[in-house]
Image 1 (cartoon, each protein chain N blue to C red):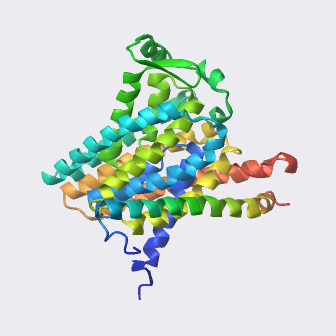
Image 2 (image 1 turned 45 degrees about the vertical axis):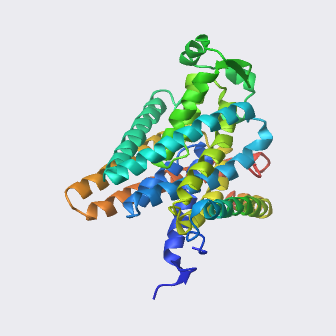
Image 3 (image 1 turned 90 degrees about the vertical axis):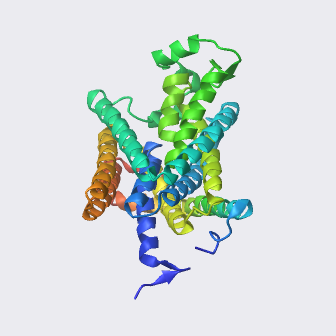
Length: 49
Length: 348
């Protein structure tokens, strides 16, 4: 996927693990924003308000 | 016609993302577990052992980064202890990795890893279920511990930890919570959990966190925070070592992580709504079912019945869905029973 697996060796491994790290950071920030924006609304909806 | 994104079938990406949500929900709610269901599931799906282990490690790395970010502001990370744990764990991962490669060379890797999983999942499942049914008090990570004062938690140090701490083999070092522990005990625990991490493709948290508490006496809140900090490095180093051999499959890791990051937030939010003791028995049963699933797969391989692979995968996914569903249903029920002002807005 993304052609990253083809780059084996230390450099390729660093790029691949770096990609996982970047994805984790993006997901943390992205889902955090989503939770701030939608969390209270969803909670109110689930409570039937 | 098969729809693909970057050469990967959309159905496969969706399946991994969905499985990630289930695992993340369990990880976010219980603070442990979940991740060690990934490697058995990949093995059941027919991935090679090194790909299953390496991709499991890379997934654990990404998930622990997100979990550590959530805990960093709670002041529950002992960095000195964490660095020592990293040193011992790195050595353990190296030995575990060579052990796995050696087993692959002699054709026993699948069998040994699967048997080890059966023993670990089954053993911990029995332990948690037994404790949940007996007292509902000591089978996993108590969510109350996160809000606990470290010194208050130190008063709950198990007797076995007090006994171990009484053996003062120099050099000694102080850790958060006002404890003094032998450096060798810390390195020993770190090496043993690193060995498991490299060998089985797990973060080692479900072994290390209880070991830090039960064997060394680290207060639970500090054990949880330091463990998460350490898993970032052990998972990162482990997946890096495997990635050098080209064993990490991003088509597995990327969708799993996307799903688990969402699931972890839902699970974390659920912790403020549902008592863990209400669900703990389901978690123990899920681990037991996980061990049964791996055993079924091994039997299927031995007697050449491929259908048992499907049965095994169904058991793993079904168990995760059962527990995740119980968490969600109980959360919604609690949410609806609370007055509007008492309902939490966010878990973070």
